[in-house]
Amino acid sequence: MEYFLRDTEPEVVIVSPERFGRLSSLAFSAGARHVYTLSDKRTGSLLERAACQPRDFSTVDRADNDLAALLYTSGTTGRSKGLIISGGYNVYPKEIEDELNALACIEKSAVIGVPHPDFGEAVVAIVVARPGFSEREALKSLRLRLANYKCPKHIMTATALPRNAMGKLQKKCATGAIWKNFCKCLSQPH
Image (cartoon, rainbow, N blue to C red; front, side, top):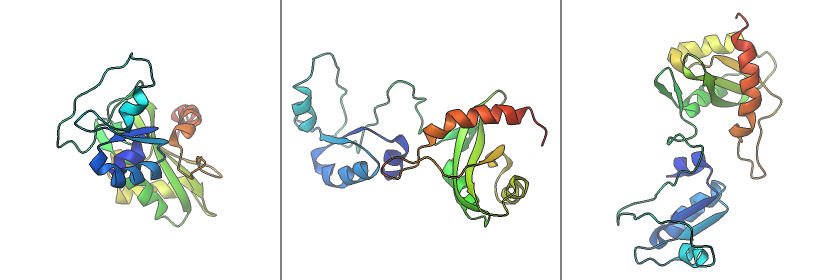
């Protein structure tokens, strides 16, 4: 649950009253601004809040044993935001970030997926490099430790990784600029 809350960066989380204590602390640590309750008896802070709003919304039933419900809104693919699908393979950024961060020449890393004409998405890494960093050497090292489809197509350096006021990495902020640079890199020989 903690992974999904951190990965989806929710603004609002709705939980059953019985799970409020545990899940609200996870939700707030993941950056949620509001945590509401909703019980099977149609009571809770969500309905109290909704009573003050216009009646142009619909509800969704949930089962008694549901731990949580993820409500996706516009712009979602229906999968966790961190997951990258490259050439039909699932790539989990955390695994690649752990390998990058283990390299002596890299202080911090973030791995994102950017649109790619052949693979659907391409794996791209953004790193805060230490002295002596070489993209070629870093990729060579990664190829020894990761499957080929997990290796970044490109490693870009930055002086810092974008973070919000809570210190959480903001991959969305980097994606647009990285995509523009990645397009340039596709046309350059390595």
